Image: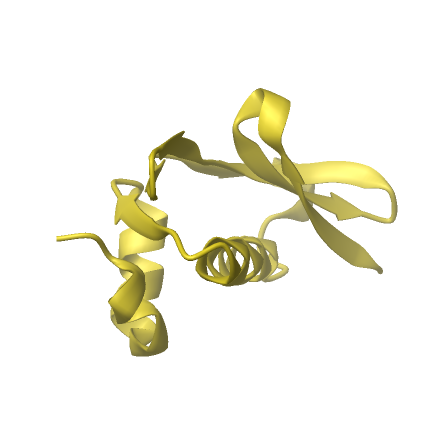
Length: 93
């Protein structure tokens, strides 16, 4: 199984593809230098395979590389950030 995360700017989301097929997405709504992350969704066919974690990690790394910060409102992203404190600096006050 190969996965790839890409930023679909026109849809305001990051997408994870599994063997070329859309497996899920993370909505990313930019407002200046802060990106609100309100919703993560993984297709039920791909649940339980760690795709949400891969998707959030790639999203946060991309946001960091652009010098932006995040406003996490998605419950999954909030939970992820509690476990992965290395991304705490990205959270906008």
